Image (cartoon, rainbow over all chains, first blue to last red):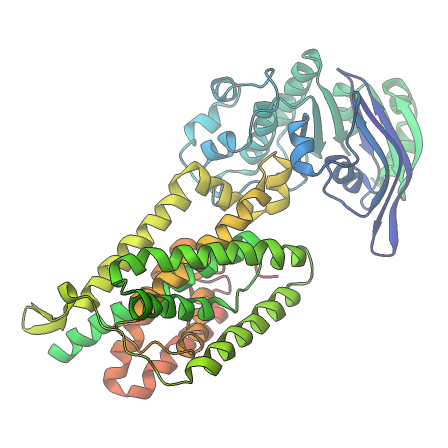
Length: 230
Length: 289
């Protein structure tokens, strides 16, 4: 499904990613773990086509995304939730949900989103700048579900959220997985990561240093935590 | 009292031009992050197109009110495609230099041909004369300008704030890259929105022709004030451009009652104070970087 290989990326002269390769099958949830500055966000941005100073190949299914800009990638089935949630202050909640065009038939409809996130229905007419942190995250995730994206790129979706919301996001990711969607997740929370994901890439200074299954993460928890700088 | 009322209306009339011009600047800055220094030059060209239409072809004010904005909008789209597109993503300084250079070329080109002497352009017959408002009589044409600009401003506000197209424009204004990542083709709208912004400038130019002499420098006098209006309203904010436009117009005209010099001071004093207490402007949502 997703196949990233030989990814190098730079910020000016500084190399942020070095020969990063990531694979994720349909219905698979994989995480990128690593400490701040390891290159996790940059990797997601490269996959989404938002970071132009890069080299390497990004494929989705049979399609080579290399020559495509972010608009075409989104339409090809990529759904991106940035680490700051990417909520617009000047759009209402409902406008957030109707802004992105549908990329696939498997997209959620607005009613299903409101059923899953009743708080958003209650605030549909309000400007999204009025939302709480948790509601913003819900809105950002709802937005990519509405697009029907086959590949979800989520940058630390649970950061700063109350446990009940973290559970709700875990349930949504399991649903997405059951529907055959692929998820590439940047995550620091090991318990959440092992609860929802199948495999984990450990990123350190722009390089993948280990690929671990859930059992390995649990078995080598202290070592992994050290890697994460926690 | 009468003088105050007259100045109030004069302020609204001046504010109408600020509002239309800063609206165009706001739309252009929002979509492209370009501070269009050439805005005043296109305002001037709008007025000249109206003047030429009358002189050369006998085409009057009303058709000119439609033709001039259209001509300038098309020219603007061409300009965006051929030149400005190449500057996208570069240091904003390049856009500034380009539009500033363009201003000089247009302005001095017109000056070479017409000198700095203003050309007269009269208001259409049906809007000449005055209207009695309570105790004061006021030029009909100016009242028309205020009403027209108010309606035009609200129409633009409505399109941006309440329609699907406007929703995409707002999203692109706030975060262009993210909006692309959501599958919205922001770049498709840049050319028409630039044309639209310049069209508004030309519209203001045609409206200004009967009130001010049509001269190559008419835009350069106005544009600095308009930039102050944009900053007061908040860079890229539609409602801010409209409110600040009329506000600045009224405040400076009323200020002129005390001393003519106050008129010029008010705008920049207001801008300075606002930048201190609220750097993003009255309605600003774009963080200043």
